[in-house]
Amino acid sequence: MAEQEDIVILAQTALAHAYAPYSKFPVSAVIVTESGRRFVGVNVENSAYPLSRCAEQIAVGAMITAGERKIREVFILSTASEPAAPCGACRQILYEFADDETPVVCRNTAGKELRFKLGELLPAAFRL
Ligand code: THU
Image (cartoon, rainbow, N blue to C red):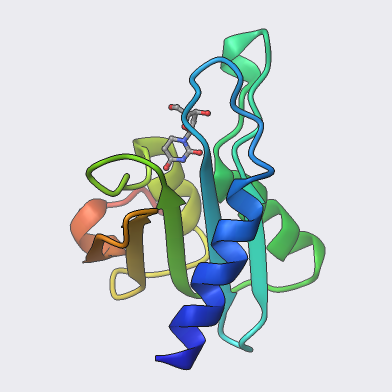
């Protein structure tokens, strides 16, 4: 699918910019919104470890900054042998702007892909 290829290229380009000197585990995330815009993020670590930010959180921040509010698809790229799925906190952060049916595509740089729906990854999400 041409759209998916574009997203892979975006994610690969960004992955090279991830700042992960402590974990040495670079991650990039591409969020596609309902209007079709794409927002990219990478993990940004910090010497004060708890201040580190996941790729998904950075992508969500870019999306909100641009005035977008509704996620259509999430794409996550890592170098892990098993494609990394979003951490628990990121599942909740994504859910704020998505729903149970939102596709979450997890891929590694070898091309292995796992596809989930956000509701599978985060059953009974917290919602006010
Ligand atoms: N990380 C992400 O950026 N996204 C994920 O979905 C999983 C984990 C980052 C956090 C940290 O910088 C590194 O990967 C290792 O946990």
